[in-house]
Length: 364
Image 1 (spheres, helix red, strand yellow):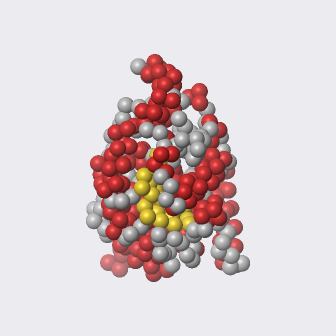
Image 2: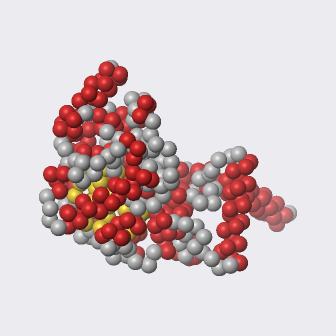
Image 3: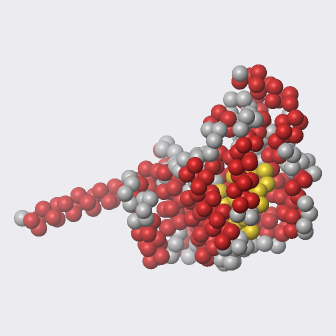
């Protein structure tokens, strides 16, 4: 009787497992951002430069431009909502696999204010482990699940149900399209031995999109969505990243990616305080920090049509910015004093005094 009970339990477990697999096939995106990034990364044979960070990095730095202009071998390891612990993981992975000389961290002050989003963390880790070869992936999965910060939390269980935290739209048309794409990918990979069917663009993911509507600038901005002060835990993780790169002799460059001018204006009460905290940490560990929100026109002339929202550049803006950033970094390598290429916060606010008054009148 005990044997039959065990068989019955086993049957329930198998049924549960099949349901979980079916839901993952139906709902998990065939081309998730993290999956694209990690698949492209593991296909790279040689790298000396990486870009890391959240979507501010992912949609800003096009490695093909840097490779052509600067003669480097680079890759963009940015992913949506990538928190500092995942950024550290990406850097550690690259340092282990390649002879990395330069790490460029693309951020906004919001990067150091947001909490870790469990869904983004699990999606990032699941994609990283899935794209590894065989036994390495299994060992990495065990290592992650039994790490101190994971094994006693709910995400150690949630990890196995990827359709809960990594899923696309739920309309029937979107699900059918997703399934069709997965079937096509499987046919290409297993029948035609084509493992390059998922375009990666060296991790850079920015598609032609909308141009920011400036009529909404006082409602949709960083001030509305983030706290004034940094998250202490995330700030500590940022310092850990700085320390790691310093110890390994990496040229670590921290870049505030450009936002539309008004996103600095609305944060006038605490922007300089945030900036000084980041500067102090970078100076402590010998990293260079450049805030391209405050860039003078001679190194980057921002335009309204370069942005898709209050934080992100669209494809046109990112392409222009990458070319200008390459020129800037080449000047830096040549020993030019590039610190003079930026306004102070007070100078910037003075340039936009009318907008500052308009914001004060609107908000207060």
